[in-house]
Amino acid sequence: MTQLTVSPDKRRKIIEQFFPDPHQHAAIYKDLHRHPELSCQESRTASIVSARLETLGFEVQRGIGGHGVVGVFRNGEGQNVLLRAELDALPIKENTGLPYASKVEQIDADGYQKAVMHACAHDMHMTCLLAVAALLRDAREAWSGKLICLFQPNEERLLGARAMVDDGLFWRIPFPDVCLAQHGVPTKSGTIALKPGRVLGYLHSLDVRIYGRGTHGATPQLGVDPIVLASSIITRLQSLVARELDPKEPVVITYGSFHAGTDASIIPDYADFKLDVRTFSEKTQQLAVAAVERIIRKECEVSGAPIAPRLATVVSSPAIDNDEAATSAFADVLETYYGDRASEVIQTMPLDIVADDFVLLAMPPGVKQIPYVYWNIGVTDPETWDEANRDGKLRDLPCTHNATYAPVIEPTLRTGIEALALSALTFLELR
Ligand SMILES: [Zn+2]
Ligand SMILES: [Zn+2]
Image 1 (spheres, rainbow, N blue to C red):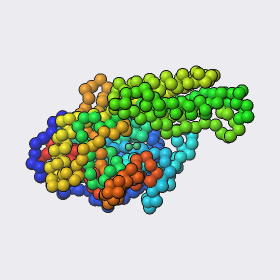
Image 2: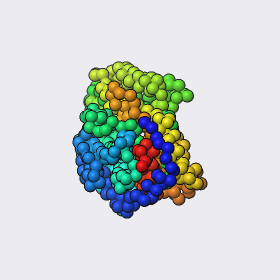
Image 3: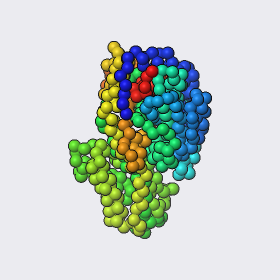
Image 4: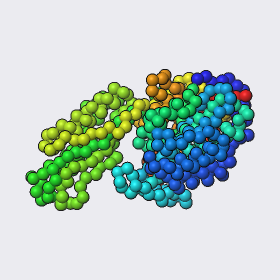
């Protein structure tokens, strides 16, 4: 992976001359937003993005690792640059009040009907990537190399990148010299945040079933109550963070799901919960996960559970460490492009304890890691953000994975297109 020294005006000229139609792309965004699909069910979305890539003249492959789509644009000698966006949405009932709000419901893998919403800006990421595909196709006389536009399924459960790799991704595409991805966050729209080194954390996700013994609610002495048992595990695991793990190391343990029983008078046979363990260091991650598993097993034992608990690891995802050289090359390109506005637009990306399996697309099995850069773009309306900032109310703004999360289309789309196009033009050869 090398970046090339060229006249700074070249990239600006490419972006200005070939900037894709904002109205057409706002319409694509609204359509994707209105029609979200749950992880592993992204068939409509995959059809939309592959049809668009085909229209643009990309070689398109579908159905990689589920609904994954890859479009390759071969444009002569040069580096192979991979750009990623995500296809999937979340089981959340949208409450934004937007005219293009989702009313979609789907049956999830657990058999339950769920409302579905793009509450993680994946619709924005896809729109930016399609726009950049159009921009670079139209600007093909100005660069050379191979552009790989990858649309990953199942990012919300952090299993889609692995599924694509296991399905032979690296045999199907020109081997990437660099992998690039951006993510929307609820900071001020029009800003881009990046930093070399570690930016996102580790994630270990567990599905747990605690067994009790069902009985009439009036005769608890005849059963083992899995709801009381699971509740005690859930509260106890929070004290693991406060009392057992190093206070210098951040740890987040969250239960996003807890289900048990059917009615007040019945003590059920089992209780189910799902939890995530997140940290910033591999060692702390191992300690925390081992402690979580130990506490769950021992609590079940001392409570007289008739069967040992079932613990299933659903996801185990590594942290994101941006490549130093690639990130600083991209940062230089951004600085030059934004010129006088650079200090307003470009920010230092804060360390964030979320995870993203994008990193696995840069870790082909048995081969040296591919350099990668992952950055954030703000999606909150600039005036709303400034006002909240002035009033000390930033934490009240809608955040990702929330039913009221509503990215403002502009200047988010423009900034996302500029950032993604400039990232590719940092590494493609300019003619
Ligand atoms: Zn998300
Ligand atoms: Zn996301």
